[in-house]
Image 1 (cartoon, helix red, strand yellow):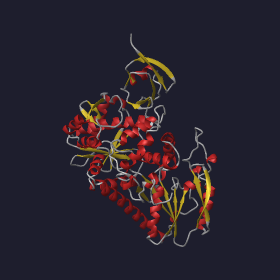
Image 2 (cartoon, helix red, strand yellow):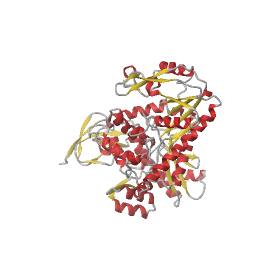
Image 3 (cartoon, rainbow, N blue to C red):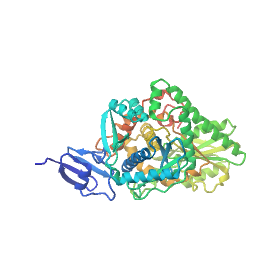
Image 4 (cartoon, rainbow, N blue to C red):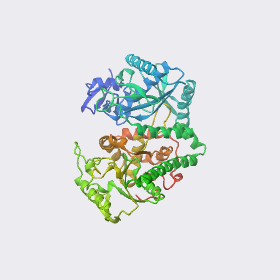
Length: 555
């Protein structure tokens, strides 16, 4: 008699008895294939697992396709393994770096001692199609880290060997694709046949690996021009390579060798140099009429600290900075518009009291004094603390908030009076040559820590809210980023090594039966690759102090 276990399928609410040891893929068939699109992975008791995972006890299972962030991650990781294998087949002596997300795809550089021409790109694409059509399994293996280090070094994968060596974990997982191995810290699809939609096209000095979007998994995302953002990434990668800090293993080894202070000082100096350059540009344009600096960026990008540090630099140009945060013009919580699910839509432009803001703005520009409101995130109401503002002859008004670049916010003001800055945490350091660090993970970790420290929210609260935040960014923020006069990268080379100590205890508070446990577990697993840096090493003016506390600025 075959022993069975009971599966609760969260997708359709059905319970199904299946043979003990059934794989998730077999269970998907047994529960009636409940998704519209092909599954990529699943949540098993709120922990992400690949579809080859076998259940030996009764479980709650929720299958995920590419319309979910977790399912899309599995798809992209699998595609990257296929891409790396194809490059190795076509250019056996080449090395490849999957560097970062840009233009709705992933930028890759292939080093082969010559320019990457169109015929070679087409050969790589055709080889990828052959691998997909062959439906080759991704074989997951878990071995002692000492053995994995030897294995990667024997294959010439020094970047992976050094990463797992510096991280210090006892066991290491990797995936084998018909003899070609690669390392990923998350699960892949069961086989290459799951990866039907992709493209690769020339992009600057490399190629753009194009992937499907969550809204339509059957088509690749359209390429969105992001030349300014690409140049910011390029600038920071150049700095990292000057410091010989390409990957996390380089950072870990520098920490172990006692170079933490030097890394922090160089990273902070680089940011201060950028801020000083922006201030100089504003000062030069002041003579031509610029009076308003608009600072926008997604959640937890560090806009507030950037604005304060920019103000200091403007003073050195004999200008008088006056700052306003759009957060202080939020409607009272009960008056905030709601989204299609009936939840407060804090990301909407119309969560701001636009008439009140514009009334204050007009008064300031007319040299009248205003009393600046303060928004209490604890009570969800606007309060007043007697903070008065008035512009002077040499004043520059700094307006900071996620909607600052939205033309509707300041539509009544001529563009010649504005200087626009886009701030984002564009994480440029990678785990290894094939594993970039998503900028959204960097920002999410910042927000989890800040919300816990200063707003009374748990990691569960912040994680549950994050999809709505991301959706709002796509609608309200990202469309305007390339309209900025300048982009500022707020990510610091060393910061995830600092954030780890703060984030881990907060993330551990998420319980197993919470749906947010999957994301909390993923983030904790990711952070384990970083050696830690104590926050005491950070200067009081560091942008990270906005999220950690202990800084010199008042927030």
